[in-house]
Image (cartoon, rainbow, N blue to C red; front, side):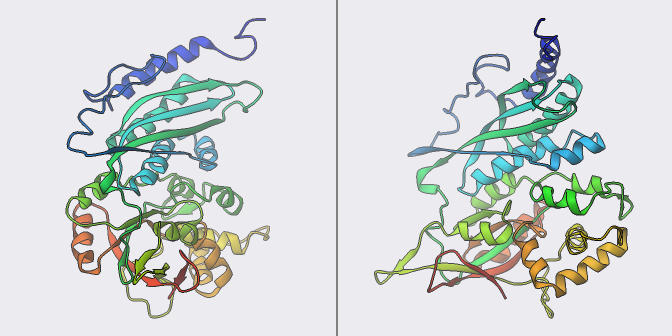
Length: 379
């Protein structure tokens, strides 16, 4: 019995690494000291820290989750790597950090170098979009532990920011505006629920299989937000991922502010886009209406599909407060990045983001919360 007989094909691993090498090189810059294949990746901070008084490294790690199952079933592997990068770099962006490099971890039961390369291809696309270097990673073949044909992918990002420019919520004040930036769809959270309530990935969704719509990769907000920071003071940022609005918006208030030596705990009042009479620009994307229908009718052996299910789901979101709260507590509902800024800067910020291809709308306001910090309410 040799290693190959035990289920680990070293030669396939070598083939995968050769495919990775060229893709990783497409993300590199002159700051990279060595290449893929070394024991560790090295990146010089000289150029990135120039002009900084106190450079601070900011890190984040995340995975793609069960969205991967949809990629496997559709045999479309080239987008979930983008999700992996996005989940990490959008988190560190919340503190004003510019991503420097990314490391990925790929695990499977039986390695297919071509499939692995498609997964890493998505990672490199995400890295280029975020301005980060794919500095290295790990591919683990674990027969008998993962099923054949199944892969898991996770990642780790490191960024840099001058300490005096860290965004941590300390500057947020009562009356500040909340600006929401549009998502590209579901992104990469809540798929364990989606897989239960939308079992047919070939169901029609506006002329495409709904599985393809669900695989739309997570938007990466790094370039537009960093560009915006050069022109407008951003006092807080929240990445709307797992936990939706109820868990992530409160994280924007890192610290209480002080006034006359008294703590003022802050919270968020979000304008409810589903409330009768709402006349703002935030519109709930149709995919969330379809999910809402599936949740409400999960116990049915058969039900509506396609446009009819979507239409019914829109009514469910308007009329069923329990499902509505569940949706806002699980999904981004069309807004996946929230900025806190002075109200006089809202129009300028929204216009700048729109010019960069990232629609943004004023979705709420910061208010005083006398009882607890970080609560949110929909108004």
